[in-house]
Length: 321
Image (cartoon, one colour):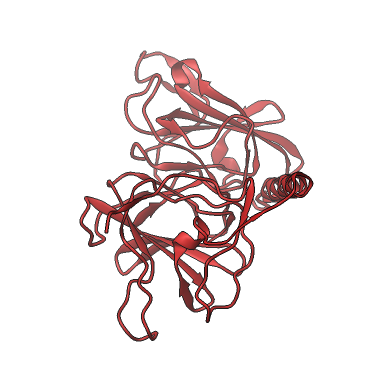
């Protein structure tokens, strides 16, 4: 059978697509628009077992390359992100349905809100398949395994009126805004979260600049993390600036509003890449970029700065989680 190429299409924009489920399964709840988690060929299809204890293929395998970006197929909340039997696994709860993605290096955490097409991880080798690496993508309703391609393809297509389509659009916009407001409200009550899990290599305070040899105020805390390590928002807020910032290299600046009675802003510097766009609202702990060594830097690290009511302060006095 010729492999089917997965394209990152969005389902449900003009048509309402019904899920093609086995006759014995309970009807699935309606999902927000869905996308393919990885653009590639389906090298092994869904092969449900005749009985739960019998062999089968409880998902589909999509060909890719190690390091490929894996995205959420539909909106939901990350239920699990971690290792299972030596393999990286991410599962997302969509309300009645749950999708799984493996083997991946997770770039999200349990409890994160995700939308269709949001990056959730990077593909890793290890799943047996005829390609360099394959994503095993699964779909469950309760304890019943379903074909995940049913999220993207249906045998039943029903046209809707322009008025009904506009109403769907308004309701989805309202839903997206509500989710964004919920994310913005997830602020730490005991302090800020440390943006990377790494040791401090240079604290806040006066020091000798390692590049220029002169004394300076080191206006943040350096964490010695490897390049490519996910960087997470210290608290909920809005990305108000993102881009090149002189010696700080690639920088993200987040406005957190009032936290603990003070107006807080944080910056994340020397990044190798960004995860979101300027203007995005972020939840506490959400990935906003990746550690790098851009700008004036002697090696891979994160330079993390904090302002309270407009004044620079030592970030370590506020980190608590």
